[in-house]
Image (cartoon, rainbow, N blue to C red; front, side, top):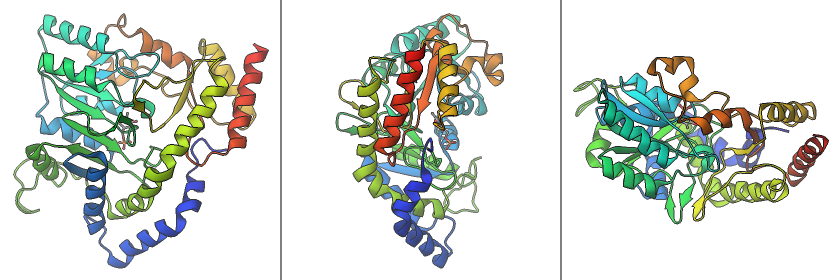
Length: 377
Ligand SMILES: *Cc1c(COP(=O)(O)O)cnc(C)c1O
């Protein structure tokens, strides 16, 4: 059994993927080929956002978004304490200060009360200027954007949606990647919509930022590639990756999202009386980057992971460390009292196999083994 079965997906989509790849090989248009533009148009149309700017990966996407807002020294950027490292790393790379904020235990997403407390604390302290909030659509479910938007308006902050795991999610009919001033996603192979290497994209309705981002991704280009008017990066999406994504996109929208939502309900129905299962808020739709349960404590969680492993059922701990305890972030010296949920989740979470090509029998086996383990305890 695979944690995320990319081989089965390839077998299902092989004809379309091979054909799209062959076109790129025949054209040898490896950099900024027409498939890149075609993909950007398809993603902008799907998300309902005016501009989609593809790039080399989700981490670069975060960094370039912060560059477009001129975030640097002296800027405080509020980041959930429970997320993948990149969300905070991008802030530090541009010279800003990540301020870690606690998450909710039920949705795993940023807690708006903790966020407001953190903003007030930075204002009171006076050394940094609050500039932006990065909300993460963790494990596939959008963060609480209506409430977040109210807070960012109240304090005059920019809002960045890190939808690296959230592409395909929605709140009512509004799609992920459309909730903030700028949104980003990642096409890392294991993300909900993955390519066959690294890839990412940035979304915005703002024409000025669109132009800046297109310049940043090609060495700060001006009118032409060899006229450089600002310091940028080299962060393009390969044409080959765009072709893979185009080949996968229709099935992602038409079948894979339904499949993972269906598997999530099967898991939840079977496990909800036994352990804490993921909570999807009313009107919210998840793309199920992960299906993550919570055990009572680290002993029970680690025991379950070992037990499943011995029975050839893979599982993962996303994430073992809260951001503020990562060695690389220690210098930002965050207090711990406000970060209780993040600390606790790192000890109790376990992500189970989740992907659109799971089989009913596999889920049944996983559920049965979890029940056996819990029954023994
Ligand atoms: C994967 C991920 C990223 C980074 O994406 P890459 O394409 O791997 O650089 C950023 N934020 C979150 C929440 C992620 O899960």
